[in-house]
Image (spheres, rainbow, N blue to C red):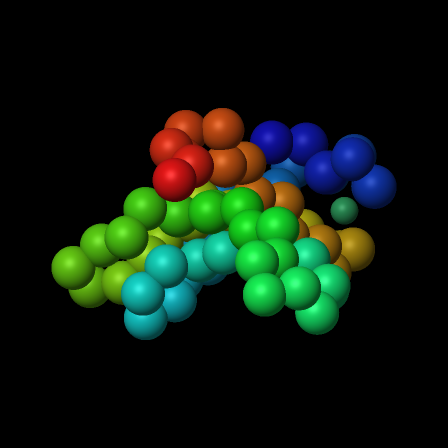
Length: 68
Ligand SMILES: [Zn+2]
Protein backbone atom coordinates (compact mmCIF):
# COMPACT_ATOMS: atom_id res chain seq x y z
CA UNK A 1 0.00 0.00 0.00
CA UNK A 2 1.19 3.50 -0.82
CA UNK A 3 1.15 6.02 2.04
CA UNK A 4 -1.49 8.69 1.26
CA UNK A 5 0.58 11.30 3.13
CA UNK A 6 4.05 10.95 1.61
CA UNK A 7 3.58 8.53 -1.31
CA UNK A 8 6.13 5.98 -0.15
CA UNK A 9 5.48 2.24 0.08
CA UNK A 10 4.08 1.24 3.46
CA UNK A 11 5.22 -1.81 5.42
CA UNK A 12 2.62 -4.52 6.00
CA UNK A 13 2.29 -5.92 9.49
CA UNK A 14 -0.32 -6.13 12.22
CA UNK A 15 -1.64 -4.49 15.31
CA UNK A 16 -2.81 -6.87 17.96
CA UNK A 17 -4.57 -7.13 21.25
CA UNK A 18 -4.99 -9.80 23.90
CA UNK A 19 -8.61 -10.30 22.75
CA UNK A 20 -9.71 -8.27 19.77
CA UNK A 21 -8.70 -4.99 18.15
CA UNK A 22 -11.51 -2.43 18.12
CA UNK A 23 -12.09 1.20 17.32
CA UNK A 24 -14.56 3.08 19.51
CA UNK A 25 -15.89 6.62 19.45
CA UNK A 26 -15.29 9.04 22.31
CA UNK A 27 -18.91 9.30 23.39
CA UNK A 28 -19.81 8.64 27.00
CA UNK A 29 -22.72 6.53 25.79
CA UNK A 30 -23.42 3.13 27.34
CA UNK A 31 -23.40 1.80 23.79
CA UNK A 32 -20.63 3.64 21.99
CA UNK A 33 -20.13 3.17 18.28
CA UNK A 34 -17.72 0.26 17.95
CA UNK A 35 -15.98 -1.08 14.85
CA UNK A 36 -14.22 -4.44 14.97
CA UNK A 37 -10.79 -4.29 13.34
CA UNK A 38 -9.81 -7.93 13.91
CA UNK A 39 -11.38 -11.31 14.37
CA UNK A 40 -11.31 -12.79 17.84
CA UNK A 41 -8.50 -15.35 17.92
CA UNK A 42 -7.36 -17.98 20.39
CA UNK A 43 -4.07 -16.14 20.76
CA UNK A 44 -5.68 -12.71 20.56
CA UNK A 45 -6.84 -10.44 17.80
CA UNK A 46 -4.66 -9.47 14.86
CA UNK A 47 -5.56 -6.69 12.46
CA UNK A 48 -3.59 -6.35 9.23
CA UNK A 49 -2.04 -2.89 9.29
CA UNK A 50 0.26 -0.80 7.12
CA UNK A 51 2.99 1.29 8.69
CA UNK A 52 4.70 4.44 7.44
CA UNK A 53 7.64 5.21 9.70
CA UNK A 54 8.27 8.39 7.72
CA UNK A 55 4.86 9.88 8.67
CA UNK A 56 4.29 7.87 11.87
CA UNK A 57 0.95 6.64 10.53
CA UNK A 58 -0.76 3.25 10.61
CA UNK A 59 -3.62 2.31 8.27
CA UNK A 60 -5.97 -0.59 9.01
CA UNK A 61 -8.28 -2.04 6.36
CA UNK A 62 -11.13 -3.81 8.15
CA UNK A 63 -13.22 -4.58 5.04
CA UNK A 64 -12.75 -8.34 5.64
CA UNK A 65 -13.89 -8.21 9.26
CA UNK A 66 -17.47 -9.23 9.93
CA UNK A 67 -19.22 -6.77 12.23
CA UNK A 68 -21.45 -8.21 14.98
ZN1 LIG B 1 4.09 8.38 4.78
